[in-house]
Image (cartoon, rainbow, N blue to C red; front, side, top):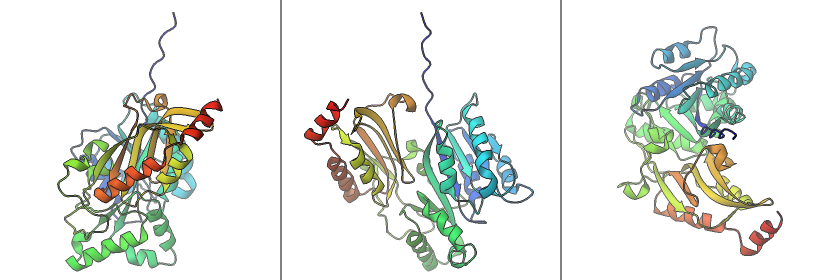
Length: 335
């Protein structure tokens, strides 16, 4: 009798923290490590310079740190990161979350892409840290402005630091400026590096129905307030057209941080149960076995700044992704 096949472990959540030099990325990472989340976190750090000062700072605060080689991130991060990811994935005690702190001149989107080449990881967020005092000047700088803008372009959420150093009227203006340059309305103010854990962990997100006050995507946010991140769960009993679903997910409102679910998908190969995930505008379809899941099929969960209007938009959009009876029959006959 052959031995039973061991279940494949669930992928490790991957989050990238980026932002221009001096924005406060390491402070944010330190705050995440010290927060009472009860999760095992591994951290990968790589920054310019002969001495990796950021790595030393983080090591003093955390007990699970992996360093990359020193050097230019654009030239050396690829191979080094691939090796480091492999070491993390094969550890006996696998982390719940891998945080990659990018160099101040790195494109966090490219780092996320490298991470996704390893099937042991699944992307949950790309957080870009922005300095409220320096962002405008950095973006206007002819030498580095394009780098800072590219970082913002890849953000699933933007963390704004140093707002406490601005006058109240300037704080709202700084946040509005961030939204004008970012592709998302998930913009939060960090206090001493502290951010909502809901940006990283699904378990920290309250259900929309239990949230007493739901923030709107473009409301004024003071330095001591943050958007009310919430989740909404939508039943999806119907078969969804894969191409239609992919196109709809790419066009979701700016207030959606991420989404995931187990749904029946129809494509040219037929109908199959698939895990569908969206993070940082990247869409992933995987089998139940690959994800190590046993969850209830026919459900999608959306996380973000969700009010009644956005909730209705999500439900209507999913309904539009349903496969018509005729096309479903055609797909089934193609097997």
